[in-house]
Length: 306
Length: 327
Image (cartoon, rainbow over the protein chains, first blue to last red):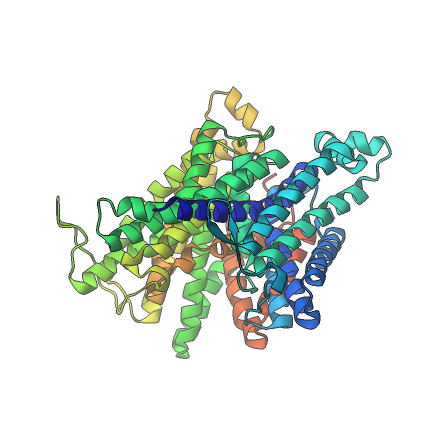
């Protein structure tokens, strides 16, 4: 395998990684601050993608589509938090799993009812399409490179938000002791709604950005949700840093294993056997990675609590 | 007789009378629906050992359901094509015997549950939920990408497997097998809950520190519960595959895991008959609402939300009241 092809796959892995980060950041914040496990996070990813596809179809503007995705997912998140989620904070995890599972059913079937069963398409805008040449002669799609840049920018923004702003201080305080900050006069239920809507907006943005390189369809959120779970289990629940490192790790492992393992096995097997064994093992590899991390650190790489 | 025992007896009578009536009026479809409800109830009874008694919220029980299904699919497909599974170092042939298939399904799903449990039980709470979910997905993706047994398309079996003395293709005779297994599993779970092991497990759920203090290992108790739970769900998977004469990666999907939990919650957590009521209600809703609207999952979702938010004891909780709840 040539070095150029390998570099291309590393970039693909990074691109998957930063998109996973957008999902995992919301999940890990919501868990860290509110102690809530949210299975319906994947539905917010889907809401973002559908909103973007609908607005892009009506206006033809990709930027408007992204804005619509952010707004729709944040609004859906805030609405769901106000109506249902806030009743679940004091409940055990089983109730949270069940109620958010019910939300997935409602979101998925509702979307199918409004948009039909056929997938929608969101196309990459003119100015971001086509490949560009990177140093070293690597040809790489400009859009995917933009995704990596956007993802990393948001990661930096999120770090600044958490470490430098008043809202960030409240979020960190909320993670440590929610009674205490309520006693200090912070409106805790408003803070919870904001954090939930922020996580939802990030998921919706990821949905819209990824929606342009795959089809926009019902059920697109759940595979990503499960990968995001793997990410935060590896990174440690509640840790943004853990979410970033976990995402990159999972993105690279998943992408590189799918390419490299069949090649590796073809050294000592027939090509077809190597392709099937390699791809079967590659699809399991991130879960094996997760198991290894857990054996060494049961609370994840950067997690403090179990 | 407490309220809950009366309700439980009524449910058992229902599981006898409905198919009997369907058999007499020649409605094989009703018998098949009841069979499906009983098999799904069995999967729920399995999970209820881990979830209800042990407090272990496993979102990966589809793994065991699927392993049971594939145990049936692989053994029966090899028997169907007269092609041995393994020739070296020793000969293993496929089989069409239900009893052998059940044993293999329970042993393989039990081993998988032992391995998954041993790793997952190092964690607790929300980590445990996510890890079991991820292990379930691991099996799902493996079953899709492993082409030897149908990959994404699944495996079909032409004729249902054999049980000595019965014609398993006759719906009512297959139902009798399933019903007896479900009743046995209920009897075993009831005994288990009152055994020293069950009491210790229940105590470990309520106060792990106290159980550790008196010298019991909560890890060991939970691992045994998780393994038993996986074995019963695996058996249900083998029966489910036999009912449909078909297995596919869908059995491994995380929606399947979610649905098995839904049975328990609809019926009532930690109630002996919770999964039975839940599975029966699920099949009933699927049949009635599914006939009214293509989008019946919305109504299922709304019902589920209402039960979680406002009726925490599930159906049996509403009917029997709170006095017999476990904690």
